[in-house]
Length: 261
Image 1 (cartoon, rainbow, N blue to C red):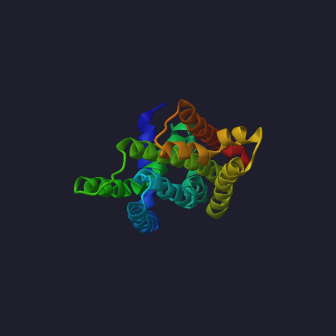
Image 2: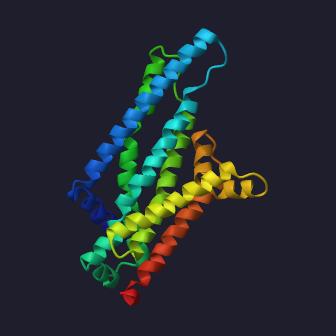
């Protein structure tokens, strides 16, 4: 595997995101929506703290409220990421450039990885903007506030966001490689990601022998543990396996393009 080839594909696709307003619009809109949610959750937390101070009782840390915030961030990613992955292969087919890529001295794995990391870079930039929120809480906790986020919980949460984003991107990459149009790729990717949410919902509402099985398969359940500051080996293996499967299927799909077309 030639990392130079991966870097070339990464640069090409990363630039393509910013040739159009799409990346700017989605990053701006995402940051704005998350900012509004942060203000609302912070206001609710401060109200709860005042209530607890007046009535007594055990206080709840800001990290518990952070679970709700980042749970909603994950939901936003479910809607946004399909738009970042929809054209990674469908645009190549539309412009008749995929054939050129496949006949160049670049392997299909290098093509897939280059496109994967380009989408992940844009999503990573989008998530990096939200780091201002835990930084704000940390700054003001040193200024006299009674609360501040646990750095370990913040680190595990953002690791979880990167892992779950990588999983979503690998799914979107696969559907972009098999779809006939960008719109179809968006719909298929969203349907697949919504299926992940349904498994998580079923895991929460099911009792009996199926509950632990569904919980182990549920993406949201795995991410919830990381939002609570827990990083288990089985969680890392779960996400790594899902990402690998998505990239593997994408590679096989790209390899089959010549006879599918």
